[in-house]
Length: 398
Image (cartoon, rainbow, N blue to C red):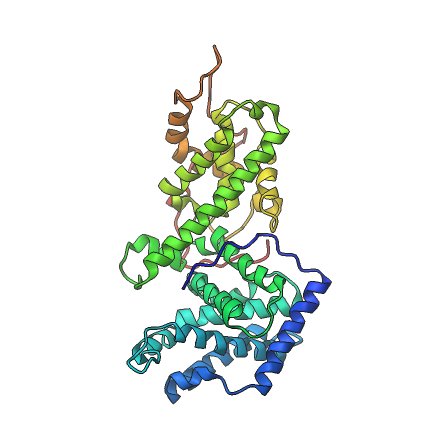
């Protein structure tokens, strides 16, 4: 399975695109109605067929019961699910008759988290095509499938592979773009909620629920997160350079921002749990600016990062934002608090080492100070020291 190329962040869904997406759904169902029976059921025994059908029906009922066009969405989801599952099984090891090995087939079909993740990916895509609303991961949460969110990272690759390589119905650009959008949302925030499969995998270090193949999948995921963070930091830094003369005279500013992001991801990746990636990128850029003894309003940095992330705005950075998690003993930190109480204490050694580097000569008499942002009544508590609630629920609509 090849890792898909990074998709653009901008998802445009105007009226012509909506019409194209709905036509795609219609063509998919029409083709299924007059085509041969789904080949996937020939690959496993009857009892497994019953399990697959019942699981898909139960999921779709909970996903689309309140939709006006629920039957069309259910039919499209189950049709596409059977076809993608067939593609997945055909990629498994073969027996002497060049058919997917029975044990491999059973392992895939019996892997409930992956099956639910596959259904959730397809249902989210169908919901998007039917309504034109980019609401991921609302449907995933409604079906209680957030526990399978890391499996969705892998499942989305299979869905994309099937639609681009194996599908016989032309795929509209908007549908392909939404697949990339879902992967971006997983990478920037959804997978980082405390107690998620990603959290478990990273803290277990190979034990417990850690499965064969998770290592390469985790590496792919972290690489994608790194690329996304670097891209946003670079665009934000270039935007600030264009607007602020005091930064324009620093020849290494963009490289310094990227170095700060890299250090944060390499040494303090756990800062991302219960946070949005853009928040940490903003902290990295702001910390780099302060390292160079330049005073810039945090809001300007946030605006620059938001401009590099077209599918979200300034709401990600607002005070008392609840981004991820239900009510806890203390509100989820806004970016100012995050920088002061968490980011700066963790990253201060790196930034101080960087500022004292002989690479950049300082002006005579100049001093560099890593200042706290001017806030009142702040308590310096590490984000990882707070008591974790037993259950975390995603606040879906930003």
